[in-house]
Length: 174
Image (tube, rainbow, N blue to C red; front, top):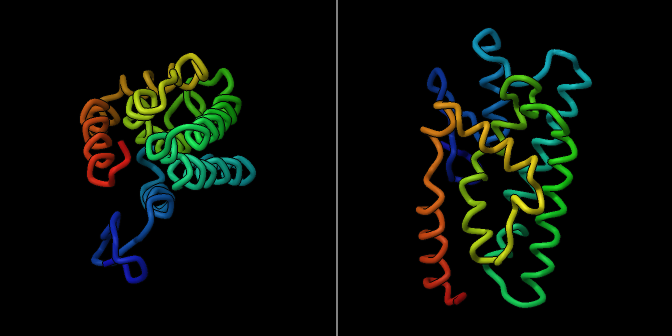
């Protein structure tokens, strides 16, 4: 149903496909704004949330962050450094708020929290601690995981780690 990339995720609503994760979250927010709004009503704050969502999509989900577990030596060290720098920028944006959306989960929370499932694999493969580097971000992730809507929808960190180890074998990265 994705006419360009032929991949998932694709949201089907009223028989019409809506492609790409960030677009889908914005679409859901626009179709059902009265349920649990994700984006702020203020246009400037909406733009800021979209900026950080795009940052997560490009810097955290992007191929570069995968180098933490797909490389070794100097290349892995550089990838870890860049990854941690990106997380620290996000931690700075979070500040002292409970969630990126303030007191409630918002757009950036929904965009970033799925990646929390991968943190353990990154730490094990890269031999570092995200919590040591970004304690507020990990506290935020744990707060998110206290919500059933989050904890019941994310994969187990150990399963992700096992999957990463399997991929490393398949691609001869060990």
